[in-house]
Image 1 (cartoon, rainbow, N blue to C red):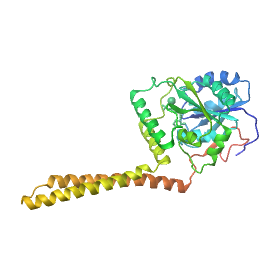
Image 2 (spheres, protein in one colour; image 1 turned 60 degrees about the horizontal axis):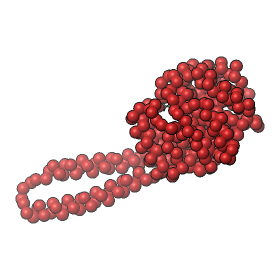
Image 3 (tube, rainbow, N blue to C red; image 1 turned 45 degrees about the vertical axis):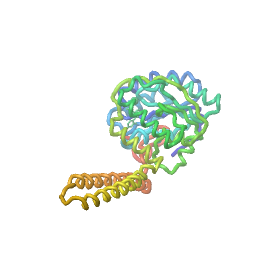
Image 4 (cartoon, rainbow, N blue to C red; image 1 turned 90 degrees about the vertical axis):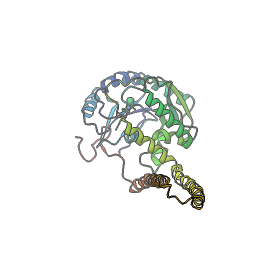
Length: 323
Ligand code: UDP
Ligand code: MG
């Protein structure tokens, strides 16, 4: 990786997956803000293996916007991986990550930067003032998610802070050195625990195109978040086991007295239920174990979570030409 010495003060990292519909709008709002800073900057647009015209559009835009740097992942690797790829390659002293769909207002970037400089902060979270633009379902699931994460990671996890935030190069260096391939960044950042501040903003509607976060991706993110920070769910198995022993002892005592006092063959229903229940509990616990074993397996394999196919900041494209 060519990491030439540059004196960029700011990098703006934008993961993009099939975002051809918003690139023009995004550039129209982002560029005036960044040009207005009068400081050397780069915009790192990470094309997460899009199947639409996102990549050629970015390359075309670069001709009239030299500060735009285009990185392409060889295949779709997911939001967190694309974000990580961008952060790890960003060269600015401060790095802001922002979604491509203009839900996070680029106009807040100067405020984040000046707050970080004034108060010597390493992290500035973009915190949403409300969630009125979200569906009731998304609000409900999000509030549960953040409550759970605060219990696991600690109180440093701000509510309603997504991936719109500023990080210092020092913070990113810590993240680079973690052996984890792709962690859940919005948890790893508070875990690093460097001095942090907040900038409040109103989250807007997606400017164009459709969400790239269907329900199953939300669930995966939640599962990754829990298992990467806690082994507590494994204890559920033990607790259920203890509960089962107590319950069975009680049932055995009842059964014994029933045997002494009556001679009818009853109780098949309770047996049936008990067998089904225990079977279900055992499967649940096996599944839980499997979650962790799977993650250990992935970690041991140590495969990279993304491949860089192209980076316009490098003199020559790596290995193969971009497709
Ligand atoms: N994204 C990505 N790879 C993916 C899915 C999403 O790089 O596989 C990017 C997407 O282009 C956007 C950001 O992640 O810039 C957030 O996605 P989106 O806005 O669709 O999520 P939502 O705001 O609906 O939760
Ligand atoms: Mg969005």
